[in-house]
Length: 120
Image (cartoon, rainbow, N blue to C red):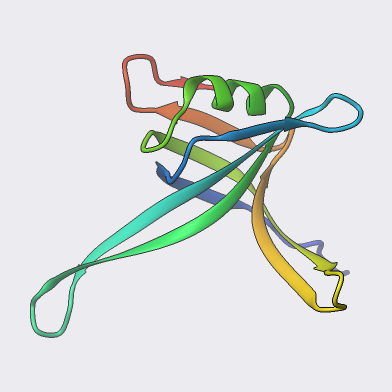
């Protein structure tokens, strides 16, 4: 029997820019954010290093509106969603790919830090 697999991404990081809120033709909210996660370690010479990884996150529906209203560049965010890669072809016939963390009705967002952290 074949298994479907698991596609789950959990991140805690800081917003690299203010959230970008837009609406689909059917008036569904979509919010795009850039989330930075950092790893601190010591290299082989004992020097402290920090590596930052950037993640594209797409949040849907009411959660999108909440993140856009209550979060700004630098704020901390907890995200649980699924990894998805999109492909498109530009006007010159060149293929492009982008991998995003999608937070829909099955995902979770928590507004961290600040005076009123909350789960949405």
